[in-house]
Length: 384
Ligand code: COS
Image (cartoon, rainbow, N blue to C red; front, side):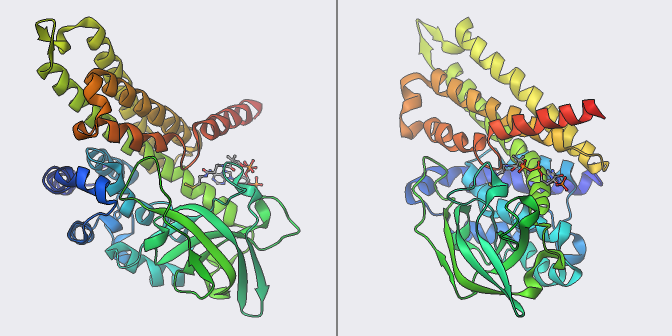
């Protein structure tokens, strides 16, 4: 749902200009240094990018899903590490508070998240619990008016910068399943938290992940999400469901960028006396990419609209994430192929995108997890 297209267009114009004039020129530098320059971070805060999804009453822009998708399509036109910096704060790191937090928790944290004063991270994955998220073993044991948290969270995006963690931990160790898990808002300054070494990754340099280790970390009872135990897994699933549409939109945006770069290269590059864009085998790669991109774009917008209408989009969200992330990988591969030898050299940038987008098929649920969610929902629906 687009509430006011004029206001949205102003925002999109601003984001498009920011991407074109500020982000694209520093893509290579950020990849080289693994740091997003502070003035860019400050500009992102000022533009309200950290508060895209926070309700207006807490100082955010309160975008609908369709509006958020539009902004992500624009953000996708540059290296995905830039989106990642505010992505956990507008997405998986803060949505738990928005969906299931108490009024006090919302009032305390959402305004600071909206301005970017606090960065939020989502702490679900563990060394032994990835796709099987419900098997997590981090514990949070009630002791007076605190929970004592012990365990290690892995691959936690933005953890080195986080002000708060949305933490999923087992409050009932006797219950090994999803219903033994609770969600907490944990302030990063709480004693007993150590952030591990920043991970060396295949791509998305500038976006940082690390382990978060909790050792007898005493978290006040007031930080239990929604004041209710046993709801944490469901909170995580709801958060991830929305996050999957957001990621799918980014996949579409980045694929558009890669295809545009490949098309321009194919028009410029001459072999056998003519631009390689005139060769049908190259055209096949361009056309397949364009068709798949169009399909993914339509899917993402459709899912966003349905979510805005209040419909259950669990299946659609997984379809979008599955198709858009796999599409993005295929487009990246064809783009490198069209660039030929230049596609393998870092100075042309396309090999960086090729590495960057590989993550899309893995995080916020692998492609195989999306297939499982889709098929399970189909079977459940058919049995009804
Ligand atoms: N919205 C609300 N509730 C949901 C839900 C959703 N989208 N999906 C599941 N739930 C609920 C279920 O209804 C169930 O509740 P009841 O027991 O009351 O019926 C509960 O959550 C457990 O669900 P389920 O039985 O499906 O859990 P499983 O352990 O079988 O796990 C998968 C399901 C595999 C889908 C889940 O573990 C998953 O998504 N894994 C991937 C995790 C992930 O994306 N990690 C990325 C890390 S963050 S970058």
